[in-house]
Amino acid sequence: MDAQRRHVLLIEDDTGVRRTLARALYAFAEVTDVYSATTALALLDRNEAFDAVVSDFCLDALSGGEFYELLRTEHPRLLDRFILITGTDPAKIDDGFRRALGDRLLTKPVDLDVLRLRVLGMMGEESAAPSSEQLTSD
Image (cartoon, rainbow, N blue to C red; front, side, top):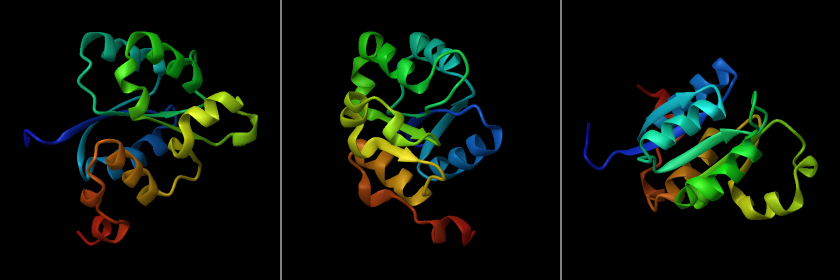
């Protein structure tokens, strides 16, 4: 593995969606994908070596919002490297939380090019994002 390759933590409880998102992110980063926020928290508690976190909003046990609040106290360096994905109407998400996320709140179905650009942008590498055409031309 390239020493410069980034590492993304992906939290999504839907297996099909998780695989699709992981494949899009793997084009430029190592991806650790998990189905729950509690599993993600355990990983972070053992090793905070993630460059970005992409989380679904509706998860079992802890929601993406609750997970974000735990990051605030336990892993604050990741707050600005957190993307929330939701199938929920964004208007139903707390105003303060929506404002804090800004353009890091994405709605389903997720445009994979936008996701890649947001993740790379958080890591200062916007120009490295492969397009959908590059990914499917293999």
